[in-house]
Structure formats: structure tokens, C-alpha cells
Length: 220
Image (cartoon, rainbow, N blue to C red; front, side):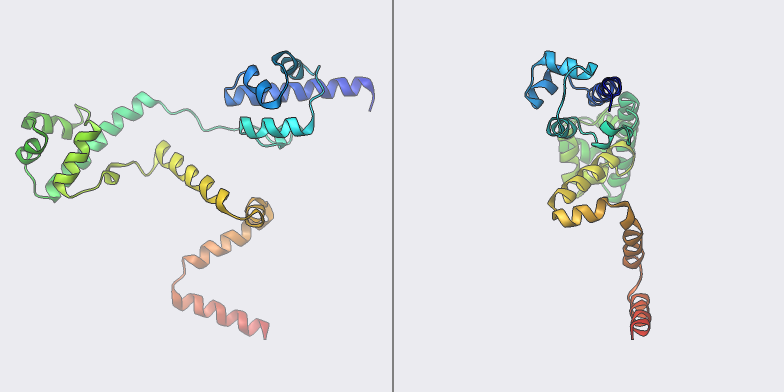
């Protein structure tokens, strides 16, 4: 590879390193500390003037939460759009109020009974149910105990929080798997096997028995 080609590739790699850093919201000083070089050297790496090594790139990938393929130019960086937190919280206050009213009616409790449990007036409970006033979390716990309900019944199962919780559980389960199972799951070739397993898990016992019998007929 010519010096010109080396220089071009170094600058391209530097741009990809900078993109990864900015994508993750990290500073050059933080990245330099992780890699074990000076901030000045890292700044040079982003300009193509520092010969960064593969192990250093690997450490950056882990620290910045990006795939190694990004540095080869084979994978793009994608992130979920930032939710409108103010709008989300306002909507959730209303939803919490609706669920509170539903649970109160289901438990056959009156506004007065809930108010007495919290030591507030009836107007406060009514304001909670309408979503006009946010329910303090400790009040919500006390209301749940009074109605025989759980706080989890108020949790959002879909939307930003639902996706956040699902992603967290997936990461936790993946990290607990053996290296062999992890390698199997991330191999795109194996997606069809996972889809088959999903379909089998949704079948009733009779259909599963029929599938097993068909497999035995083919095998023998």
C-alpha cells in the first residue's frame, strides 16, 4: 500500500473514531484514558496522525458501545430517537391516573378511603385520577397497599420504557450465556433456526407430537 493510500486510510479511520466518540457522547480525554495514551495523541488519532493499534480500537469499541465493524466502514451507527421526555411524563401522569381510578373501582374503594389512607383530602385523590396532579411515588405505593394492587400494574410495558427494559433483560441474559451460545445467537445464518424454535414454542402439545412423529417417519 502506497504512502498516499496509507495516509488516506488513516484519515478515514480517524473520522470513524471521531464519529464513534461523538455518537456515544464521550470526550477525547475520556477515550485517551481508556486507550492509555495522551489526549493530544488521541486528537491526532482522530486526524489520522496517530498509529492506533487493533487492541486500542477494540477497547474503544467496548467503551463507546459501537461494533468493530464501524471502524472497517462496514456497519453504520444507529440509535433510537431521543424521546420527548416532557411529553412522555405528561402522558404517563394521565395514564397513571386512569389506572388508579380503574383499580380503585375494582377494589371497591371510595375516594374517601384512599384519601384517609394517605392523610389527604378527597380533592387530591380526584386530582390524581384526572392526571392533573402527579402522584408522588410513595403515595402510589401506599395506594397500592390499600387497594391490594402492585406498583408494576402502573408500569409502562410499551414505548420507550418497554424497549429500554427489554433491551436491558436481553443484555443481561446474553451475558449469562456461554460463549458458544452467544456466537450462535449473533450469527445471522442461525436466524431461521431461532424462528423455527419460536414457532415450535407456540404450538400446543398435539401439534408438537405430530411434528415429532413426522420427523421420525422421515428419519427412519
